[in-house]
Each structure stands twice: as C-alpha cells, then as structure tokens.
Length: 89
Image (cartoon, rainbow, N blue to C red; front, side, top):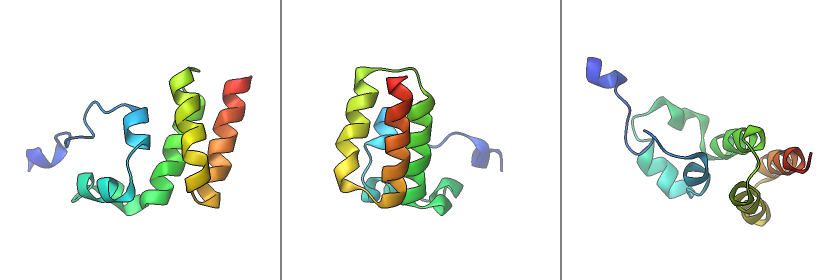
C-alpha cells in the first residue's frame, strides 16, 4: 500500500548526530519493520560515521565522533578515525 512508502518516525527529518547517538536498543526499536534494520547496528554506525566525515565541519560533529570512539567495534572505529581526519583537512 502507499502507506508503506511514507517516512517512518523518527527517521523522518532526523539529524545525523541524533541518529549517531542511538544505542542498539534504540536502533532496533525505531527500525522495526524498516529495511534499514537489515544493515545491523554496527553497519548503521559505520555508515553514519562516513556521512559525518563528509558533512561540513562542526565542533558538534567532532565531539560526537570522539565520544563514540572508545565504546565501539574495530569496524566502526576505523571509519570514525577516517571521519575525524576529514575534519582536520
């Protein structure tokens, strides 16, 4: 039905920083029934880290990336480090 194509809350108009702050339970809750869920939480964080690396530099982005570094997997850490380098250029 056409309602299947309408944006699902809270993904509609969410900022990258808000999405990057989600823990795994929040990710699972808000992606229920959404194909994005198939990517999995780690890939979700990795993809957002890349998007943040490509976003215009801001203190908020740099702080969010640094805050996530110590508590994440090697896969995500590698992409956060890449994103931080992008903001130093």
